[in-house]
Length: 121
Image (cartoon, rainbow, N blue to C red; front, side, top):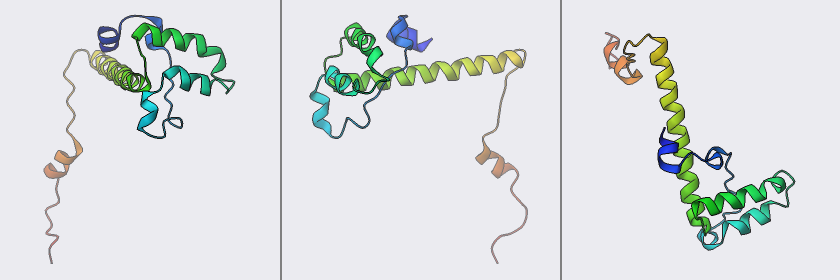
């Protein structure tokens, strides 16, 4: 869907991402290469086997600094989430046998079903 449309149909696109929340302490980190972050993080045993895959990911998308990694991470996160919502909507519509599913937002329900009593004393 959107992920494939904007990012391609490569196995690395659908891989679990790693965002350097604790590493990104200020804007100056955005000028560093993502490889510096990955090498810093690879000291943890969980990331060590994934390091070659991560470097292939950086090469695939031409990511040269942490700012580009940040922007790409956000884009891929939003695209994947969009795909999940669209797939969910399709499945709901299929279960309803093609009938239009319309739900009234709760603020509108409050206006429609407001009590007849006067709150002001």
